[in-house]
Amino acid sequence: MLAPAVTRVQVLIITIIVFGCEPATKEKQSFDSFPSLRMVSEVEPLEEFIEAHVGKIKPMRKKASLAYWDAANTGNLEDYDRFSKLQFEIRQIYSNPEEFALLKDIKESGRVKDAILARQLDRLYNGYLKNQIDLQLLKRIVDLSTEIEKNFSTFRGTIDGEKVTTNEIKEILKTETDSVKRERAWLASKQVGPVVAADIIQLVKLRNEAARKVGFDNYHTLSLTITEQTVAEVDEIFDKLYESTNEPFAKLKLDLDCILAAKYGIAVTELMPWHYHDPFFQESPMVYDLDLDGYYKDKDVRELAVRFYAGIGLPVGSILANSDLNEREGKNPHAFCTDIDRQGDVHILCNLKNNEYWMETILHELGHGVYDKYHDPKVPYLLREPVHSFTTEAIAMFFGRLSRNPAWMEQMLGLSDQQRTEIEEVSRKYAQLKQLIFVRWAMVMYDFEKQLYANPDQDLKSLWWETVEKYQFVKRPKGRNEPDWASKIHFTVAPCYYHSYVLGELLASQLHHHIVHNILKLESDENVSYVEQSKAGDFLREKVFEAGAVYHWNDMIERTTAEPLTTKYFIAQFVE
Ligand SMILES: [Zn+2]
Image 1: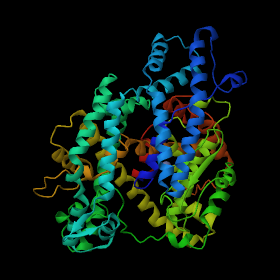
Image 2: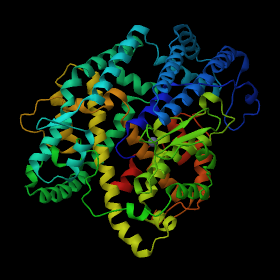
Image 3: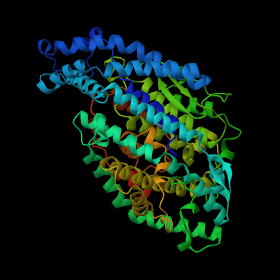
Image 4: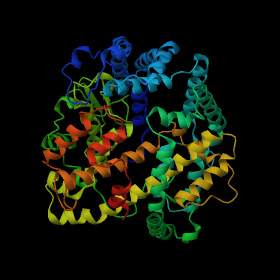
């Protein structure tokens, strides 16, 4: 999805922190969709623990979700305070050292043989593990990251002594053709770096301290482990992606550079970081003539989404009945989806306009929505959530991509063949450009952040530019010696998360390939729109949504597509 928006990230953080589960007692007997090899006498202490834990956590989690929902809708400080307070109370439960010790004992004894109970134990254990930080250290971490965030939100860069907003900088980078003015805008976007860099390094060290106390090398390793990943497996995926995108990216970037250089009246060799259309070269510059908004302006994107999801057999009426879709003063200007109670009360927040961006966004958020909505209610509460943040991102991306799919647009918007051909030409190019630029940028984030946590005392200014040059083929400005990495807010608000966006794209492509060839039984994905294809919706519901977190993410993917997560379908779809 686009440039990962902070607000979407925030919701993910909330769901990561707010673990919970429900008494499974009356459900257990009838629970027969998934493997069970239970030996009651041996696991009783765990079942008792889960029941008590659930009794506490379930209502708290629901209250916290509702408080966040209120806050996002009203912008009221009291709602935000209520949310933070509840979040802190939940966190306190997960920081209990005696309960963690008990879970650790049970886990290490290896005596839980029942697959469903073992999965609940794993999720619980990870939930406790990440919160085993003493309160004093936790407070220092929270205070410092709040301080950094505040500096980010109040700092304004300057151009010729005049303060400028982020939006003004973005506008200049999108439209200005004078290189000097572009350079000044880009420099203004980096001025926050020196203000926050030392604090971020300190925050990294505190997070590392917390990670070491529970036996990890550093916070990066801990973060991946508690989300059931290993550094080695993510490295392997990124290495493959790097190798297979090197040449295509070089070619595509050269084409792009030629267009940009001509536009600015300079030589290709003179292109600098400020010649791309955003401060980090993470988005595709709009250089080809494509205006998709025109096709949506007389349509109702909400109605299109409702009709599409109904046709695919995943009705969203009950989600939209509880959602808030229109712009309003004080309301969060972005979009997110939240599962309030893991019992079907799912809300999305949007600020709809009838254009392509909001068509994509509502399809995306409803993708999260149907994943949450269609969990099997018989799955124990603790496992009744997407197995990983990247798997729900994948479903959201799978559906979000349709807003630019020519076949989908033709059918849903009633376009002529000619209109469809026009879109086809350019939208394919943009889809490639967007995906390649984004994955190469995400490689910078993943690699740099890993090294940041491994050694926060190294020369990070140089490391950043070496990483940018390696992956993005963008030159370090001569003599530049500033902490340009620190102007990216994600290091503070969404640490060690960026790779999830990439894994989400990979899985979206893998699911697409599998559904096209094995479920719809087609030779290729040409003309595939998914419109009225309830087989596709049924498949996703049965294989992905209903299972929740019953299987490890890679087991779920293998059960669904007959192979573990792979880069090859993303490569085939966007790179070759
Ligand atoms: Zn999303």
